[in-house]
Amino acid sequence: MREARNAREYAAKPGARGCTARMILGRACNEPVELKANETALALSMLLDGFAFVGLIEEWNLSICLFHRILGGSPRPQEFTAVRVNKKATGMLQRRPELLTALRDPPDEVLYAAARTRFQAQVRSVLAALGPPMMRPAGGSVDSRH
View: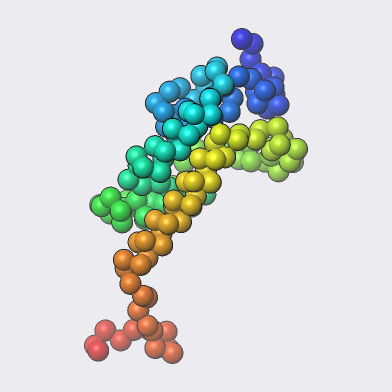
């Protein structure tokens, strides 16, 4: 199979969609086979029931804190470093928004929506377990002597 010359050609290739679903299923991201609907459903079930934690890259810092709150340990400074930031791809999508339509990924969009919902539920659960925030006096500081 020849290499794609641009994003639109890549998106049209068999197996271009469903990378996240494939990886959850333990397969290669770019496997050149279309994902079946039952495989997406299985990946969704695994995402909802098989992971102790779900984080979101666009909520990186909160995800790091949430990870440690749920699974233990303390965050290290290097964990808050942005990884795999692709400014070139982001810039291209900002300049050519029509590519977003060409690059749509319905199987992974289903997984992302579920992951986002799960992430938000995890945040609410952790916040509820921590209790209400400490009330501060009108001056904004807390006097530790009381």
